[in-house]
Image 1 (tube, rainbow, N blue to C red):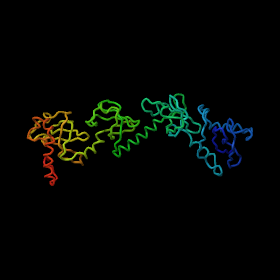
Image 2: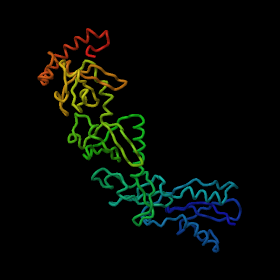
Image 3: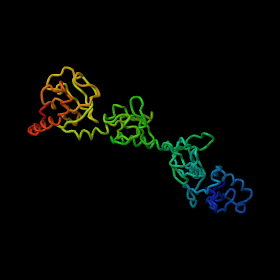
Image 4: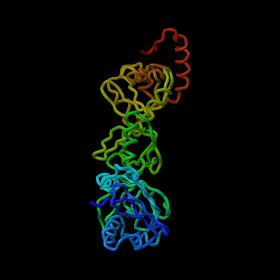
Length: 378
């Protein structure tokens, strides 16, 4: 059986390495000047030339793009030729290591930029086509405006299509990395920025890098409206994430809730929007966190029906009378803003206008009772 030295051959315009059979168990490496197959006639015997030529062809690429480009020599790890352990099995194992399979991720070099996409050199004289739809580009951008020859890209091997035997995708690699980042954000409850693209199904379509997501309108803080945040960035947190179904739901409310809770203090007057009205009281959105205004805290006079005083979507002012940070519970009061009993039922707008007077009065009382560590309304 013939023994062969495993040497890859590429066109470099200079001397290259080729296959050379030898009759002993030690491989022999010869340097060959450039020819059509990397070996010259004076180096080999005529009866073995055909055999060496067929072995060389196995590693030659027929891609026409490289006829106009200077190729770079690429090397792979091979068994050491100076050792007696070199065998045919080791040679086959080295070949398998450089095989390109669908789903593999490779780093390639751009050798040509076209309107339809990019041509990527992956080594081993393999040039792949990267279609424009598999390339991440900002809106209204063309490939030649973003990339140039010589740039390196990390790509994933796709099945052959559109008359191309080797097709790759940069977008697939980018999406996988984005999903991994989003998983980290979810586990660490970390906030991140998204771009608002549009409005759909009572919510906002947002995008993080190349991943689109959904922001329900109830998770948008009241200080913002859908029209105001269009084409702007919002700070959000992951509300729900499913990679298999490519489903991403985010919340602006969760992102600002922690900061907003720290800003609120007992005895402070804050602005809010009525989100819901229940028999037991009113749910107030404090621009990031929710507060509860019980019926008994609406006015010093008894209130039979909260809906007779407030309407959903109405902007009101409340005083914070209790905060349970462990349970994320905030209790509010409008009766604390009344200078006289029952004013909230007669003219609440007037009460809100004079809130500063009520605030000074309450602060004075709170200072007197601070030693008790209990709000006098609660």
